[in-house]
Image (cartoon, rainbow, N blue to C red; front, side):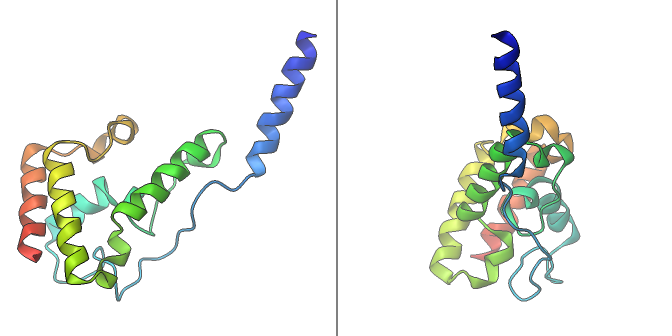
Amino acid sequence: MKKKIILAVAVVLVAIQFVPAIPETGPEPRETSLLVREDIPAEIKSILAEACADCHSQGVSWPWYAHVAPVSFFVGHHVKEGREHFNLSEWGNYDAEKKAHKIEELEEMVSEKEMPLESYTWMHRDAQLSDTQRETLIAYFKGLE
């Protein structure tokens, strides 16, 4: 009986590897992405690239474990949700009202240390924001209003 259960679990684990769970990625769209604009200070681009882009843009750098189910389902869901809430790649498509709302949300989430997610920074230590980086990011976005 134990062998059948182990075999069944193994078959399921192998089978779910073929279920697509990772959202599409691609190059950052030059006309809409906040990450490729030339008028953004290098410090801001660096913070966004390190702490935000892997969940909030089209140009995700997928770690090896993101391709292994069931982790791929968890990671894929987080990225889909992150893009829905705030997508750096789509910034140029947001109207003024939506940008203002996104800036408000960003300020709240970053200042209250809800972003980046602890589950992300646990594996990506470079994404942890210092208080200075948080203040810099908030000040930059407030200046965009």
